[in-house]
Amino acid sequence: MTIEGPFWRAIAVFRVASLVYAAVLMAQHEGFAEPLTGWVVIAVMALWTAASTFAYSVRALRGRPLLVIDMLVTLACLLATPYVQGQFQGQPGSMPVPAIWVASPVLAWAVYGGRRLGAVAAAIVAGADLWVRVNGPDSPVLLNGAVLLFMAGIVVGHVARLAKQAEERMQRAAEMEAAQRERERLARGIHDSVLQVLALVQRRGQEIGGEAAELGRLAGQQEAALRELLAVRPAPTGSADLRALLMRYGSAQVTVSTPATPIVLPGSVAEEVAAAVRAALDNVRAHCGPEARAWVFAEEGRAR
Image 1: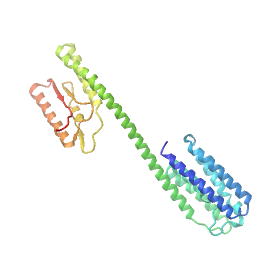
Image 2: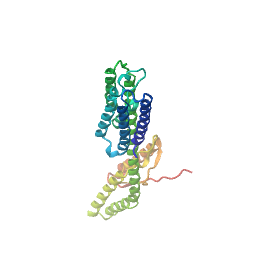
Image 3: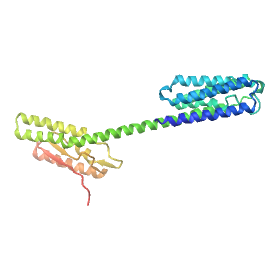
Image 4: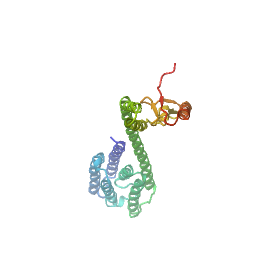
């Protein structure tokens, strides 16, 4: 279930509640001037409320065609107001036949496309509502409804967009966490087998000499490259992974042996340890020659 699900359910509840409100207004005014037409409009609203609730609940059906149909049905019900209300149109406090039900497509467009699409839907519905009022007998032109439609479209669209972005970030984080767990599982297996074999081939090749030495040198390069590939994720803020810092020094002449999991230390401590190792390797090269072999062994233990 996606994070959009609660939004569509909330819109469905709004459609039902606003439909009931429109039916109560119709009953209070005894169907206005054209009761039969008025109740037909209410019936159309009820049928579309049921149909749209189902359609929006199916992810495959959500799309621009459904949004356009939703808007057209709403506009048809709204534009039927002058024919239903007749001389009753424009009375103080009167509302269009669909009443607040006309906000349903605005909310749907906002959830689907964000605040911009919500503002477009609000402009369409508000324009139709103003047209109905302007062409009615002595109908007051009120902008309150248009303002509320725009606020609903923009605010709901903005919140829906933020929710989708948050869901995408959470999904990416979950995928990265799953990938990291798999990487650590493979790293443990490779650390216990493949890396040790490569290190053995490198050491034995140099001992035998000749073509075997070249094979050992290649094995050492692949070992260093593989260790770099298995570098783990960054340490928490304020800390550093000593393993990742030491892996930088691995080469054909330098063998770095570390655990398969991070060695997390305070940042300053990890940097000082890595600097000390670098200085020791520099001394090896300076006093023993550039082809001298060196081994760096790191292991994490609990302080006593």
